[in-house]
Length: 177
Image 1 (cartoon, rainbow, N blue to C red):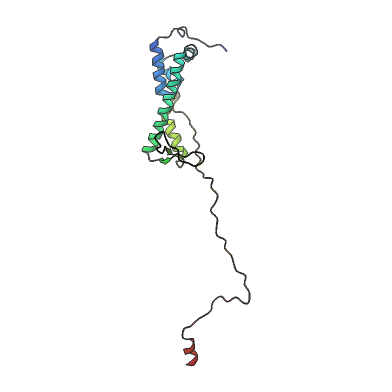
Image 2: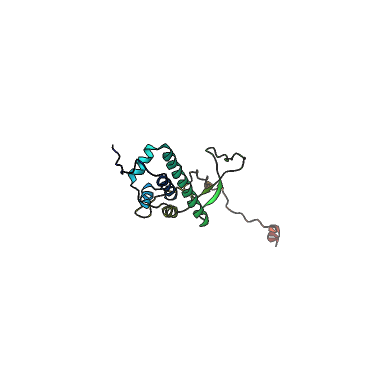
């Protein structure tokens, strides 16, 4: 597979590389960053392939963008009152602690309508053609066994069973009168 190269791809200015990486941190999308800077996409991929420092910068830029995106979505959800903080637990249900033995808290958005989360992400991820079409599936079912239900027992009806019996304190008085 051959790489199409712009005539200046082999000798980019350090400013062009820096500008691209800065834009990549802001938008998180190679196509958008190239379009905004009027750089041919093949050039930046060529730079990435040939320059180890640029490749590391690219990876760092994308990691920073992802962290910012996650934080933006969480902040927006928190501002809208969509999430709730809960203590993180491991696979055994034990609390997760940080290096200072403090409880690790996570924002739980499992009870939030997935359409809201999808819209929040769409507003944060840009593309050349407009907002991204993101699908978020949130499962908020809890796999717990149902509580045991009480058994309703109907006693068998026999001739010797008396449902009710009237007891009067003054039964002797009524018979003597």
